[in-house]
Image (tube, rainbow, N blue to C red; front, side):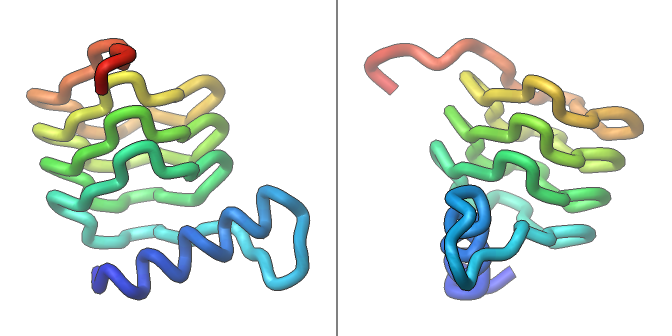
Length: 105
């Protein structure tokens, strides 16, 4: 996925979370985000079903209540990510880092 398109989706999602005009829930179903840098991104409540996030940098990313069914996280860095309430079944997590986020990250 083009970085400009992804940034636009993230901006609209932030507006949606804030219940502001022009906001819309991030719909990244089936998105190819292999190796994407989503450091500390706010994807709370986003729809990422069947997205490819293998090798993605998701350190400190907020994925609370996100729909992550069938997502491929192979080799991704999810250190310190907030996964509370996320739907994670049928995903691939081989080689995924799930370490807690440190203050110096």
